[in-house]
Image (cartoon, rainbow, N blue to C red):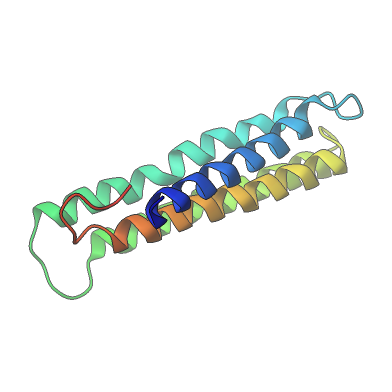
Length: 133
């Protein structure tokens, strides 16, 4: 099996562990509150600016720093920070329990690390014909 397939399987495993932690933060009988599931929206929205800037960079031939890419990183970091802040705010306002907030933060850490590693691997493989995931 090639190294790309192994990396893809490991990324899928890490993603499933992160989502499992998020679902446990919602569904365990001690917590029984589905508010932490809102961070899934942040997972989806955090990749959109990066995909859009990559598409723009492919269609234009500029050298040096790219302001579009820098703005997309700024917006992405806003989504990432919001995903980490939301469980803390919900726990502080007693909407969810502290254990649910900790499980959500752990799931966030794993999911965002998985997304970051995916982007690093896909950027490294873009130069080859038929490469990437």
